[in-house]
Amino acid sequence: MQSPTVIGNYFSTYTRSIRMALIHLGVPFQFEQADPHSSLAYKYNPFGRIPSFLHKDKVIFETLSIREYIDAVISDKLTPKDLDTRIKMTQMISILNDYVFHHVLFGVSKRREMYEQQGKKEEEIKQLLEGPLKKATTIIQGVDKLVPCNGQKFLCGEQLTWADFLFFPVMADMYAIREGSDFIACSPNLRQWFLTFQERKEAKETFPGTIADTLSKKKSNI
Image 1: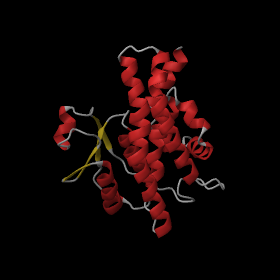
Image 2: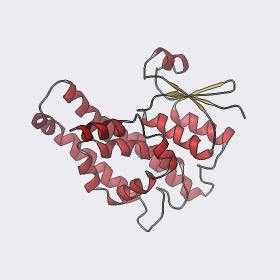
Image 3: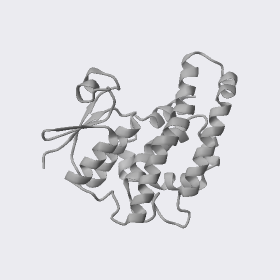
Image 4: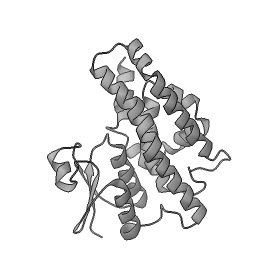
């Protein structure tokens, strides 16, 4: 089979999800680095977003479309055949896209980054983030209630699914930021899943260059 090419960046959570999935499926692939809104990103996505996925004569952009293509053409191992498990997977992915990205990633992490770039002092940043952090914590608590707490290994039970590969990169970055301790405290089930999942080969191989990696290096230098 002709190897696909992933267009993206190490710090992109969606790019990491696709890379992790391909590693798990044993699919060799090429990786071309492109920042969001760069000329290379616009070459394959009219909105300049990443990742994009090139395979044979196909150019696929938007992560959910890439997921569909991988399921249809390469392997559908990550999409459950069982209806209940598949519904749970779809719910978790929808929650990630509709709530976690908006209120946790953008609501807290991106705002903190913006405030720090503006030169605001830490005390002021904490005050500005008080409301968004409360909202984000409520959402993470909601996610935690959906995570199996009876010894099952994955977000949807005993089967590894796309939900695991899409959620993991986001939580890796969220647990690494200053407010990560708040998220850890309110999500014991999600945290246990995360700690187990981060030991996987796919997680370790795609860690370098991520936001979590960058922040861990900054902490070690303090």
